[in-house]
Image (cartoon, rainbow, N blue to C red; front, side, top):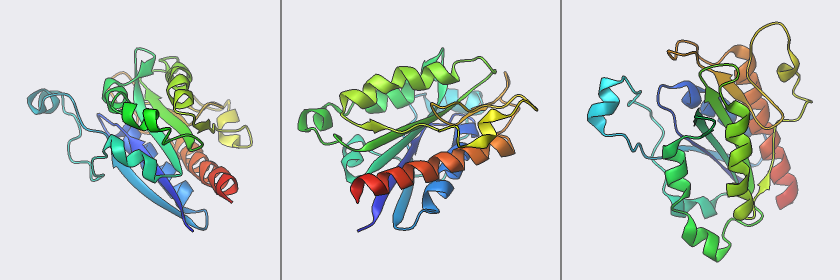
Length: 201
């Protein structure tokens, strides 16, 4: 029986979208794993989104909260907003009360990746403050272990921590994920898929 992994993301400008694709690539590399990439709905009015050059041509379909129970693992990605989860992603999860009441996500695997404008812009706090959400659903959190050597570099400013893969976008969104950051994302996807397969075995 195949393991079902959902990469669920929100991306305003394409940085998290690129990380999501790398996470999905990593998860797909594990035998017996089927991966879906979906995004949460945009809550910003389209007129405003266009004025601020949001990336509106993303190919991933829109997810619904009710479908989360169909997956063995959910890997969540969104940018940080003031050190916490972007409101679009939080609004999506705030609609999962019915799943919580049913215990539908208990024992499922959760993981998270994120993006911030600056090196100390809230990547780690975004993931850490999301943990209670996953734990209230009874999910099992999987991070990014130090066996992922890319997060140990001192050669350049890079994202990444044991909590999850991260990227640094720059104050104007001018920096796309680096080769190392994408490698961390792929590692995380593969690691989550391998852990999920063991738990489901």
